[in-house]
Length: 454
Ligand SMILES: *Cc1c(COP(=O)(O)O)cnc(C)c1O
Image 1 (spheres, rainbow, N blue to C red):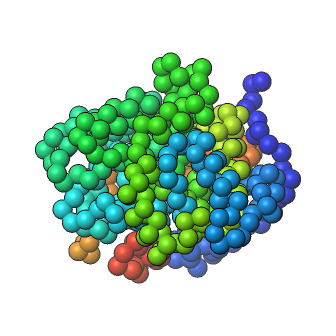
Image 2 (image 1 turned 90 degrees about the horizontal axis):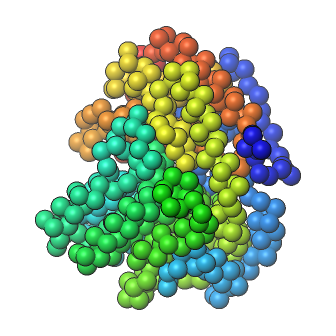
């Protein structure tokens, strides 16, 4: 077959409400140019996030009905636990309402003032949970990962030499080593099996537990299969099992590669740590056989895990982003390459050199995509990272607009619309103007702040 088709057909649909450019201009102004403030019914293609936005399968909807809502010992938990353990062979599997709850429990136990927790790149909730304990979240990404044009096949890799130097110098201050697969914050770029093994070996040599943030474990396994030497004959399940066999535990958001709308887990091998984690879980989430979830959610995740490792799905999943990136690169639009697993990252700094960083080129581009074609993306640049703890502003390293793909939701014609819209905005890029912040909260301003065009 030449065209990689969507490996599913559609059984239940949600209408998209069409809007005109005039309407969208008015909607944008009313939302003070913050796309988080736009009601989703006013969005044509919603690429704000791939988190919790997946379309569930008929089997998952069926599994919801099978959900058993017993407080303790529900068979839904047994199905969930064995589905997780089938892929990730950990001794203790602790359900949580989403990924950040697993992180909060783990770092409550391992973090603390003066400690340093290294990773390839910490996701923002991971960083937030580590910093909330007084510890430092340190990113040790390889140099290629910082270059949007580098075609390195595993741009999400840990810089092993810097990790080794850190462990040698600060051994007493490092309670554990983490690795995020795929590396969300650096563009959904994968981590190689070789790099996972090398990170695990270093952690072991220095006597540190090694944890994987496994939110996009299936996409990462697909990249290992298709890009890493000697891996193409192995099944996704085999690769996934090997990846997690190198770790002492994991945190997970089932809203990503769990194909679920809510959920997550913390998995651990260490008995003492698991027992402490369950005590915290009972305080903050719920009893250990449901965590922060309903029985039906556990069943939806269990079923989702059997579908996410399907190779036809993963081939289509990764191909959508490659397809968009290829078309944009052909037309000279600056984008992060190679395409990431879950999103396309437009490089607003390169596209809009006439807009200074602190007039937020990413925000200007995100608003233009909405105005042009009703597409909602997310600025990942100086709006998100520019505000300093002392209230001052500093330009971020990069100015991206992330177009994150919900799983199994949009079709190729939707992808074509994304391409056409981006090309149209690129054509008129010289006329785009920057933004200024007119009203902002003191923290996490990107969610609620207001803008006006300069
Ligand atoms: C989404 C995400 C998290 C947090 O998960 P939530 O379910 O949103 O709390 C952690 N790490 C990575 C890499 C993520 O993408």
